[in-house]
Image (tube, rainbow, N blue to C red; front, side, top):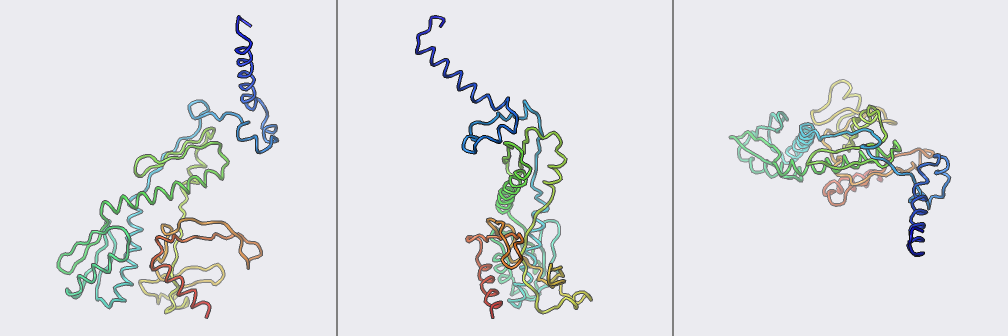
Length: 293
């Protein structure tokens, strides 16, 4: 064969045969490929073309820092309000505006206690400034970077799960910079469905029940500033404390399972992070014991 030795000839023939085997799935109907045993589908599969050859959708997502800070500050304000009342510290004008939380301490001797109490309400560094008895709280640059990393990390996982539900082959999902996520979807020509799905916000927060106020009183407007009225699936209206005891940032995972009492109905089982639990795990244990009594 063209002056080649037998060894070289067989090497060429074997190489060509292997190439034909790997290229064959690209010419077979999808039904034939799907009938191949699962153990072979990892290598006996058609080549997935990228955006440069096949075309598709390219999306760039960015973390909304302003909304993130506002949500965190509102949670911090609720926790601070409850904590200062427990410490019997008199204050007024607690509010969140323009990326800061402000309040006025009525007794100047309580300023140090107020600073310590506020710092205990969040695990990230806080900037606490005082002007007389006026206190202004904001997040430091270090805290902002920590919150961005956490938000992007959680968003990456959420995006991957939502994209997987579409059955898109070999999507490329990766972080770009400090607060952006790049999504490349080969073969997806209409990105409108993807945009709509990605635009849905998923939030999970846990609140304690406010036993000092019932739903009928709340419906008439007799409800404190640190409480809110919510609709329960089975119990109807219920009054909750506004302070967030556990937020989505404190959950490291959630798994689908079946409700033992609900005739096979699906429910989500959140798994709190052991590292971030702290006093929240104590709250859970105390309320679990109270429910058992």
